[in-house]
Image 1 (cartoon, rainbow, N blue to C red):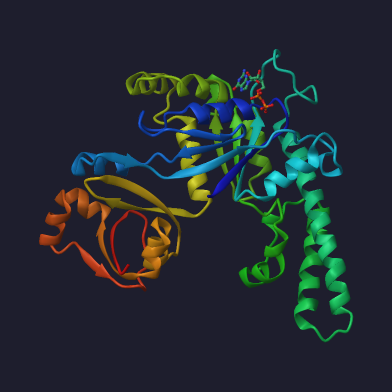
Image 2: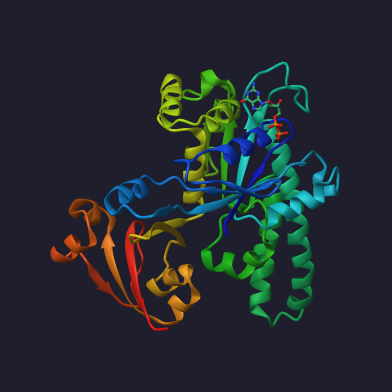
Amino acid sequence: ALQAGIVGLPNVGKSTLFNALSNAKAQAANFPFCTIEPNVGVITVPDERLIELEKLVKPNRVVPTTVEIVDIAGLVKGASKGEGLGNQFLGNIRSTDAIIHVLRCFDDDNVIHVDGKIDPVSDKEIIDTELQLKDLESVEKKIARNEKMARTGSDKEALRGLEILQAMKAHLEQGKNARAFAVTPEDKEKHLYDLFLLTIKPVIYVCNVDEKSVVTGNKHTQAVQEAVKNEDAEILFVSAEIESEIAVMESFEDRQMFLTDLGLTESGVARLIKSTYKLLHLATYFTAGVQEVRAWTITKGMLAPQAAGVIHSDFEKGFIRAEVIKYTDFVKFGSEAACRDNGKLAVQGKDYLVEDGDIMHFRFNV
Ligand code: GDP
């Protein structure tokens, strides 16, 4: 499953946010969250389209799609050198697909800051530095291996690899993240992919703010925005404390009222999950039968047989064709039969590129 890891210094609100995510009734009571390990949760991805499909199809059940969230605690200054349980936690980050970096942007004298002052930009740099040092280790190890191969001068690939790795090394040594390194997709694939660098993973910055700042931000969030403006990363303002209150509210109306009072239309948790989903380059297709209306996760660019394989490997092996209705057509005409009558059901073969929002019906051999 695709996984996003929550990182940040101690006491910035990671666990509070993780618990809010765990308790969040993302859409409705029948979309549960489950904790598979103390620090790993599976969260359903809110999708208004499922609600519309439910109204039209009236299925026995609705199954949303999910993303795994891992709370990676214990990152402190010196983690890359094994401070605290540093190395172990850095290993946890390696297996994630994206990073949610929480930054403390709230003032509260009752909550101790590890460095004694609220400075999210400096906090971010401390975490970044630890991750960059770890990445430097990986790059240097590979340089040593490549140098042996490149020594004869006949291995062009090894020489090119060495060039890229040395440029990456210099880049990291300047305190920059690997994701900001300019490289062609081919070189990245050939020479960097196998390193599983930590700072190359896509990132969302979550500014944990107080209640007054969830809409407008504050001086701390402004400093963060300025500091990451070249990183092409999304920044979200979320109040972990408020989220944890919203998360336990049973009634949808209460939650909406609470949010409206704060000037919000959607909870921070919902915004965060949606952004994470986008960050992972995921797309959703649906199956819509009377038994079950269900959202399925694919990565963008998947062809119909691979998409079928997400349901079951037999669907991919025995793939014959797919009947496809666009979500907007389904909502417009109201049912599969009506779409068929109006020529809105397309029969697609194995070269069909599945699009976000497609409603699929697979035909396959068993
Ligand atoms: P972690 O170490 O990053 O996991 O931080 P925690 O989630 O344990 O939070 C540390 C402390 O900060 C706890 O006492 C939280 O109640 C408090 N805290 C977390 N988020 C907020 C917030 O948005 N506002 C305020 N005032 N306190 C918060």
